[in-house]
Length: 123
Image (cartoon, rainbow, N blue to C red; front, side, top):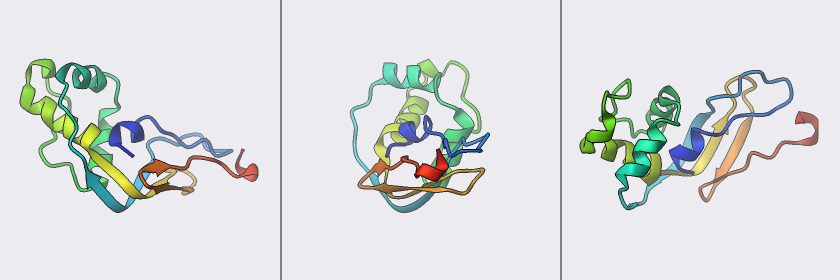
């Protein structure tokens, strides 16, 4: 599961009012090289929740070099875009769990795929 995907997931367990951002418990992280596309990364930065991305990067041990806030004129800063590209697209949680911040419910991640299915009593 890429951190870009993580940034868009939330817990929908019955009764949960704030299921975002999900915590990450890591068993295995892999890094896969992906072609750098600065235009795509620039568009994605505007759509991601930056604080959630920072927290996720810390939880997987890949927050080095990321500033606490999005820098001004980031579209023109190739070094910044490459750091964000790496964290969003190249760092992948292969095995672990996503954890609902409110209920503590764990959603397993196996082979890079998060299982967000709910049990009948959680709907």
